[in-house]
Image 1 (cartoon, rainbow, N blue to C red):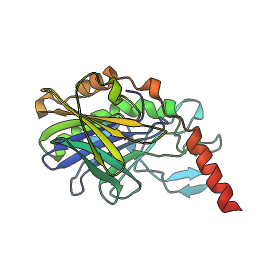
Image 2: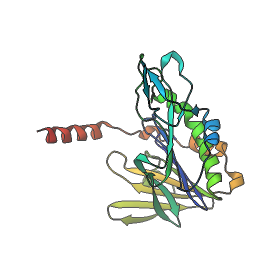
Image 3: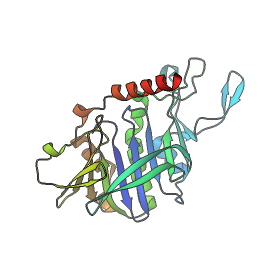
Image 4: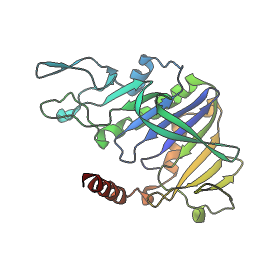
Length: 260
């Protein structure tokens, strides 16, 4: 799958999730409160170091995160990564439970969160500042997947893995098999169960009409970075990429209304 997907691993002590931005410039991992993941584990897997205060033109600034990468080539900045039980953004993570799509709210004060700094403050005069350029953030995707697996095994016994396409992967007419339909308020669901997996389609809006969630029962000894990557690579939602123009126009119109 292309960017914009999520992986949610069910454990005996809660859900551990990974979120990717459809712009490709942000990565996040969520895991339950009360669980301790040592800094050493995170730094080793992500190949980052503990951040210190930053010197900028003689001024001492607070770091932009708990961890920081080596300085990138051509003074392109650094990748900064934070780790906290408070995060300014929230995400909804999905799992399938006996044919029902369940929502798990993550971020804010609901989970621990590990995330790449979302903004680009790097300049020629401040080469230690964060970059959020896609080409640099995407270098950390495999490392985040590896960290996701490690944290899930710390949290509890592995029960299942749920993949969320983020963008359109399947539509009812492209499933190619029989499915059950249901509706809750304005949202329509299509459900398929096989011996290997469960699949749920969730209706959306004019921008992303359908998202796909696929659940695989899983034992800890079978969960690996290679298995997750193989599954992600086996699906392609690139032809249904998100078109941001209607959304941008919507916000421009709202801004004009409130400005007037």
